[in-house]
Structure formats: structure tokens, C-alpha cells
Image (cartoon, rainbow, N blue to C red; front, side, top):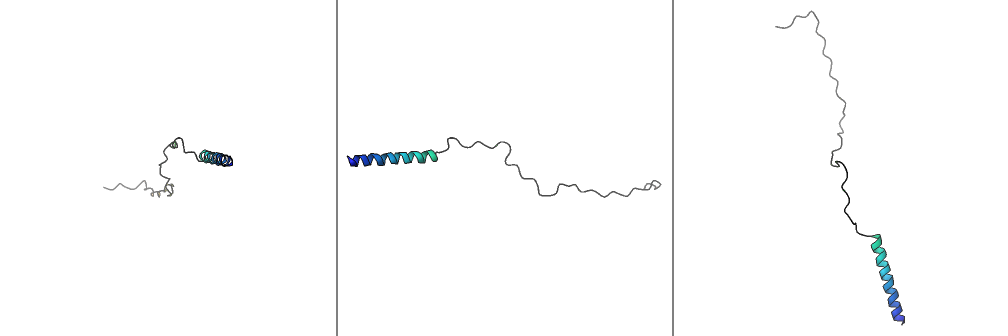
Length: 68
């Protein structure tokens, strides 16, 4: 009788431990959803986005004759 009692206790502990392990490490039911938007877009360039200012050309004198 004691052997049967010990066997039942061991089986109960084994089943309880297995149930806890499965509950804590359950496999994922579905794969994760894809991210919204374009996640493959490249990062912005590290270069400066400031536009370079061009030097102003000197104004031609009004009385200068056009070249022919």
C-alpha cells in the first residue's frame, strides 16, 4: 500500500511539474504581425542639408556696350 501511495504522489508531482513548465513556456499561437509602414527605408544621410549660397556676380555697368 505504501508503494502505491508513493507511486501516486510521484506521478502527481510529475504531472503538476509538467503542467507548470508547459504553462510558462507555451509555444506561440500565431507568428508576430508584420510592422506597419515601410520599415526598410534607409536612414537619413549624415551629410549636411544646408544649401550652399552662390556668390553674387558683380553687376555690369549700365553704360557698358554689349559685346559683338
